[in-house]
Image 1 (spheres, helix red, strand yellow):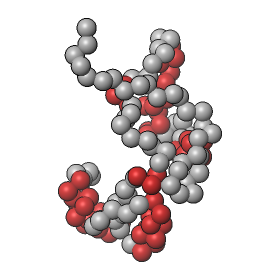
Image 2 (spheres, rainbow, N blue to C red):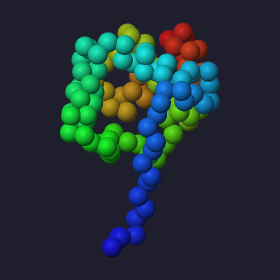
Image 3 (cartoon, helix red, strand yellow):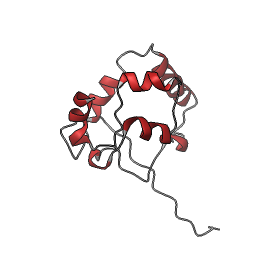
Image 4 (cartoon, one colour):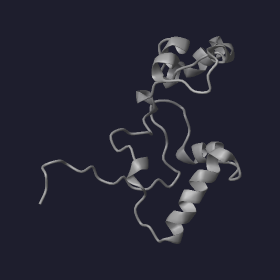
Length: 122
């Protein structure tokens, strides 16, 4: 029996050839090569461990907690970026920041097309 709620379809796995839309941002494979060039780093080891456990137990569905089916991550035209100077982040004096603090430090977010200009301006 169903409770009347719709369940989003499970997205198809990416193969790396997908291209980001909304700007000249490259492909998913370009991102993978940039984001995970060294499997020994702290930020990648956890993902690698999760992958190995996934493979070891023969899982066929990825953990839905990592899925954001409500948006298309390849459409960079829909992304917003906050850019702050290193000095303003250091002056904040904290190791982390919530969205309100990020907005205070960065001002209005920019789209992908304006990102490079904002970075060079800060």
